[in-house]
Image (cartoon, rainbow, N blue to C red; front, side, top):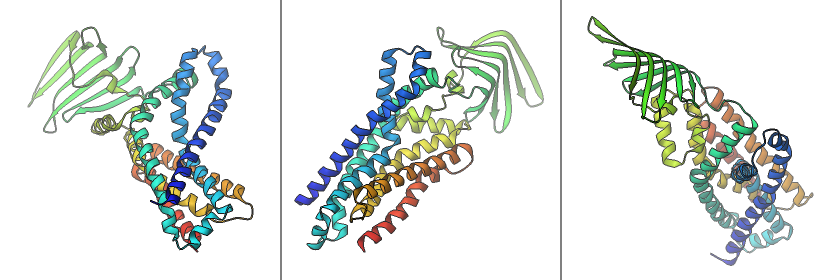
Length: 357
């Protein structure tokens, strides 16, 4: 690589880091101002607040990632354009595509960073970040605890009318076992509770009906301690469970939820698709940023920055709209994660052609 390549790579990465360091403290101060009354009202411990804002840093950075990227690219590219450095480069015989190369190399470095943090760091932060919000801020149920139905393995299905994750018990438990599409036995109980000390499930008012051809047998007990092919917490994982899992655990969780017929499977799939789509968005956003800021405008750098911020928020807006469609309807999780990138890719190509002309 030539000196100009190293120069652009250095400027890109350093400006990106500066933008993050500038805006994250602002985001923290705004969040504190918004939630300080909640902290006082709920007597939140100081250490819990500190840990919350350490997690908030990763959450906020991941949420406004497109804004930081746009600002970084547009800021230093506009400076190059205003100093006529880009005109000098292109006049020396360098093509616009060659000029893009160091930008794409920088984008590749940031994409790798976004992939690694999105797969392994942000999920761990999301776990405690969401738990804090549900405990002290929103104070609403973080699980679906009513009328739960799951397939726990290829042959067995369970149902409970309600589940208490704190006491680890559920009411109106039913388990149905099938062999070759025929029910062979059915277990019912008024309640089921996980006994941690003995590592068993305790069923009260236990009834088992077995079916063999035309014969039917009953078994009744006031209480029964037994084992099942599921964990009590599998009945109702927290709503944000997928967001807290790293690469391999997320795949295993999605497989289990899909096999169990989870109603939130689309939401879980969307989380996985976004883990992959975010790094790709770096290249698209970089292309757009360079295309809109590589030539002088009458309003100077301010116009470029305003345009970049607008496009960044527009990208986030489309991303949120499609996410809501996935979570609230049967819209494809794949399209929900990748369609905003596809739309902005088309925009990027059009802006690139305009910039080359």
